[in-house]
Image 1 (cartoon, rainbow, N blue to C red):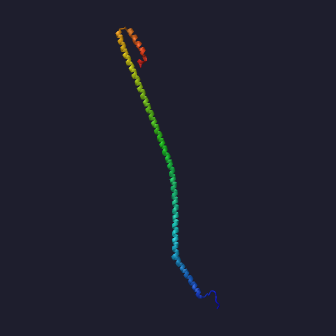
Image 2 (cartoon, one colour; image 1 turned 120 degrees about the vertical axis):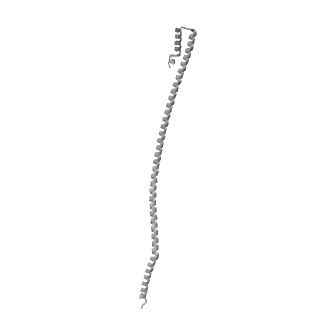
Image 3 (cartoon, helix red, strand yellow; image 1 turned 30 degrees about the horizontal axis):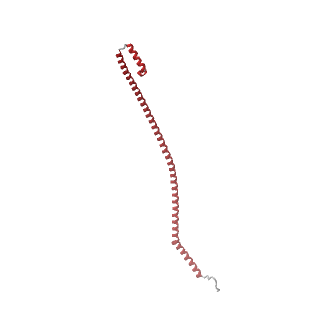
Length: 172
């Protein structure tokens, strides 16, 4: 027989089939003991990363909602501050009006009291003038008595004195 490049005999075929079965069994063994744990590890890692991404997305949504809420509160705070300032201005204006009104009332009372005091002083001065007139009349009466003048002369002296003093002074 002539030498061939590959000598295919039954032994070679049996060895080749046995080798294929051994490689297949080795592949199944390696797959079960090596590849499955690696796949499970990768699957767990993938699930963990996916969960962290989901949590990060949820946290971002929560942060956006909180940001919107705080911005709304900031806008409300500005409105509340404006309302508080407006209320304070109203109270200050009302207080100012109250103080001005009280001051006007007090000024009116002071003016009225001053008028009453002026009237009393005027009355007092008029009373002093009347007393002076009475004193003058007594002095004049004393002179009349001393001079023993008749009643006509006496009446003319009284009328003269009254004209000098003035009837308005005597009547007020």
